[in-house]
Length: 374
Ligand SMILES: [Zn+2]
Image (cartoon, rainbow, N blue to C red):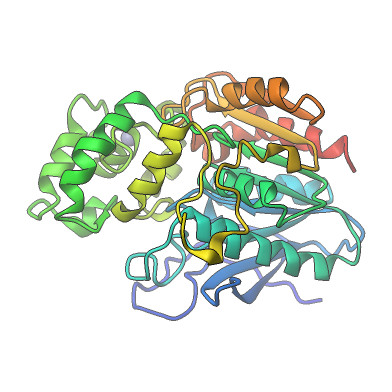
């Protein structure tokens, strides 16, 4: 078996048909990048990381929207993939169509989370299963990755998972109030002029059509970094906060523009609909291709067939107490389900995976949950 180390070199910015290489440090591991397409033919990314153990359970990791699998393999801190490898698991990383590693992330065709739930996640689960030869498969998902997974699960498209960990949000999305307001007002405003909200101020520059947006995001911000301001103080201009600032290492803070890409504004209507419904609801109501998905995932929660661990930072500035709400609603409506909730004190949202102390404060909850079910 060959061992190939993926380095932290910065890839050239030229347009390419392949995924941007991972910014990873995976000592002694085999990294297998699989040419992969979703159920509708869209090129997405699937990566298997292994240390050669063929008898351990696999864990599928799902990133958040505009992030990528890089959030699970960051080299500057102990990352989740390392922690899983050390415990003997085989991590699989899916770069679904909202990944900033994909070459078309700013230019590809528009989609909704229905497409992720229907085409991306089930195709990945199906492929991985073929490779596992009967071994169990878990999933650990963050933010929109978890929200989309909830739709796949309640549609019955990914049956038989050994367990699911959902971070930040799952079946009951509850966006920050400020976020909802800004999505209604500023979202409509910006949508007429912009297609994406950028995060990398170095690329945008001081004088551009985005200047006013960055200026808005800087109001009241403690940190002078414009990229950080638009993420921590504004969440791409929609008014939420993605992380607790002090939880990031300096190295992670300096590479936020690598970890999180521009946010497409055309996704806002679907996000607004799920937030207003307090449930993951299907966007495509009349298109027969999406009939496999439930109109309302929360109403179909009885189809969940595996244990679920809901986790969230106590200071989640994006999805607030969505996970606590989800736990309460499921305990009431679906008491037969094995659903737990763990709140991480002092954490926000994105820092639950990329924070400098995440290995100590967060990963233990995940490993304990997996370990009980192996
Ligand atoms: Zn900052």
